[in-house]
Length: 287
Image 1 (cartoon, rainbow, N blue to C red):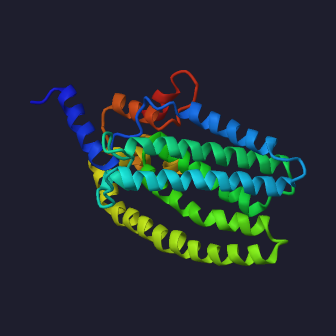
Image 2 (cartoon, rainbow, N blue to C red):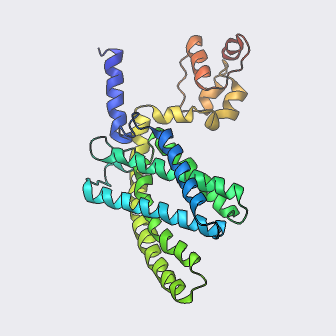
Image 3 (cartoon, rainbow, N blue to C red):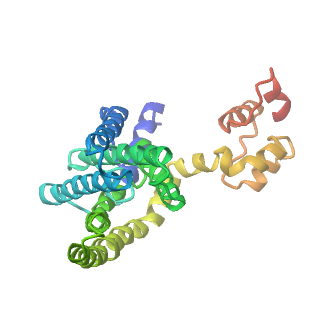
């Protein structure tokens, strides 16, 4: 018989096989994000006031893109890359392989997108509906990867797509200078094909290829079940049936195993985050 601590160790080892063990809890995530947001804000503020806010935003965007490209190039040149390993493409990476440095770059980019989102809220000339939606989606994706490790490594590799952002910004900055504008237009097309279509498709291809096995491995250790237990996935069914003796919740949610015991049903009800804050309401719902 295995002790509970031994079983937990096996579960943790299985979880590392698909999710990895990075980002490390030692990384000052929120400090890096805050400093990055402030740093980009200062760069914008100290640029010549003669420049329009939109042009200044292009300059800061170019700076961010250059940092991202240097980070990705440095990683490819200094560390091992294994896009076929589940926990190093669809997970958070493995500590000790160099994957741990990815978090710093992603937190830096998260700070930039936070700054840029705030900038769009302050300056109407910088704001577009598509840009707002883009930034919100990016921020949600990056933050999810930072906090739970899912696709964290993939997010880092995709920072390499920022290569096409550089000529795109320069094309806009020099739109009144035909020769430079034409040069940067050609460079944008070339870099877009290389970084977004070819490179980006390769990274995403490996991530999508890893997805089925990633999901299966998560299911094997119960993580997929926990995610399905989340209110977002079960709200209408669990509220309607309330884990009652009819067992409808368990019939409609095959990933929920009926513990039969009333106490365990109560525990499940608590785990679902749907219980009301009324004294002993959970017992009324579970019996």
